Length: 140
Image (cartoon, rainbow, N blue to C red; front, side, top):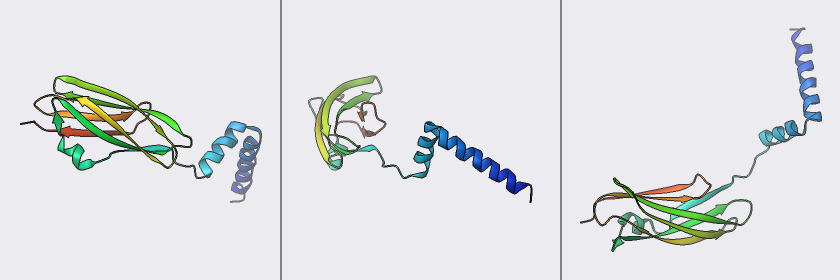
């Protein structure tokens, strides 16, 4: 036990010296010991009942998407909607939405979908991991 204490003190002193001389080490130490604000974007269908109903008209599906920013600064985000069937991509729509921290902005999309059969719709924000998926069954 008497040998362990000096070793622990030596390691502590070396670690402290490393933190004192390395800006990168100080930065990493601060990141790991301080609570960092979450930086993300909430993505949701504005009217979930309407979205889940999959009401397409003449091969076009209209979706309203709400984007709530939890980012540090205002940003213009590109929202992409893609519809796919078993045969591959059917339609694609892009729209930009201006966001501000703590506020919600709505964006409307219209995307081509199959006239019959099942299909999926994916909503994504370009360059981010947030996404929505919607599965629509056969249209009678």
